[in-house]
Image (cartoon, rainbow, N blue to C red; front, top):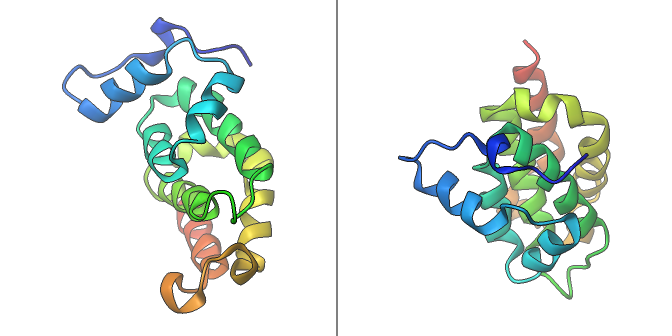
Length: 141
């Protein structure tokens, strides 16, 4: 997959979140994006979620790669950021995420099946595997 070009963004000039993502990520390679993710994984997950479809598909895979190589001691919110973004996209923009399910969902399930290991307390976050299953069922009906 190639770095999204300006014409791939098709941004709504009234959408400030989309415009901010465009300005921050336009022309960035996966490696450059991963360097940005290190500053604030949770913030970056929101930025990715607000991207148009083509940039989203490119940068979400970079974010997944970043999450796979991270640990909770280094980034305490990295797993929460990933799961929150995946759940949000399934519920709100399933068409964006559906072609990438085979790439994105295995990591989501790995985290949710053993969420306490990833610092995602059941009392705080609830059962994230159940939430993921329910979101996928609702999106596919």
